[in-house]
Length: 443
Image (cartoon, rainbow, N blue to C red; front, top):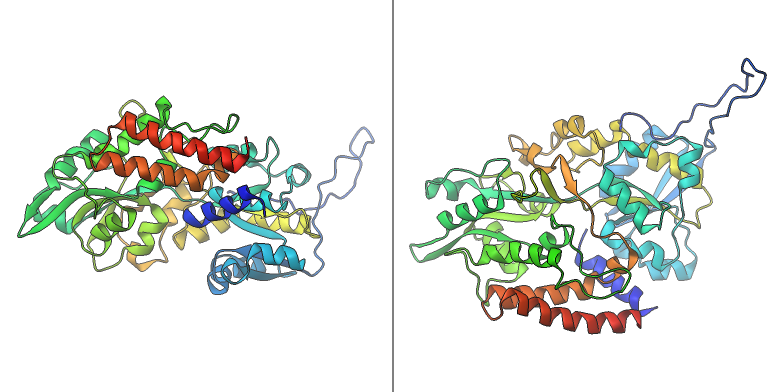
């Protein structure tokens, strides 16, 4: 396996995780129009019995409950077979010649598709079945096109992003008003200051975060590397702005971190288990998976940058990729097109999956209705009206994520612990990162 592919696999493990049927299955009658010419016929996928093999990170039961059963109900001629990643390593499947029709990967795992040469440009099917990409969230489509160099390898099916979650009990305890939707970063840091204190021998923090999630989906759309030069962007203005925004939280009076509390695991524990932090900035799906009735919690919109009003964090979409080895590409396309329909999106939203539709009002009104712990929560705050453009726009960027995280964590740690200023931390970490990139890409 190539070195870059091995790193890509490690990277994907580190960050885990419409109004009508998207395909047109109505055949044309073949009648001639007034001038005697046959109108263009609309293609109709075959309805012969077919088995489609899916590959995803879900367990069999979760996959069938979330996706498979609804697919089979919609298309009785399709039998769904699922191969879970956990018990089926991709390298082993490739070596054994195991067929796969559709793969599910997040944008941060897209190199799994290209690394094993599974990529297939579905532009032919999009044109053939008159599929409307405009109904999908624009940044997810643009990212897919960029990753494919102008074509498109898959359709986004659902997404993830960042959210602001807070412990109502701690706000009430300290007599502080809850964060409001539309909150700005400066306002959030003021809240963190009010909520950071020592009481009864306990050090309470106002705000903690997943630093890696927040840098990857930062509002400046700053990436780790330049995809052309394959060199670090740590000292670029955009990346420095994104970095400084995150590290400034740890420099809020009383909200500082130390050698025991700076890590991702420690910050998560302070919020989820210990309930010693009032607020958390994290992936939406991570927070919703970990929060339960043991905490009285709610949600506010992700903080806005004052100079970028209305711009949320980036999207982290999950795509359904038809493989170039599939013998049932048209039937597979009909299925993934259906997965972007309003019917399917609303169903997933009820189960707690963020919809991928551009017009998401209807789907978000359904969000979480089948999830008891989400009843009464401010779920409309989870998905901003405008998502920042994706920074994960080229395979080289995705491949460099793992060493990029390592370099970022070093810079983050050294700055929040007061060992290095922002410029020094980014310069030194960037220099080490460049050495890794040179080794990774051989340039």
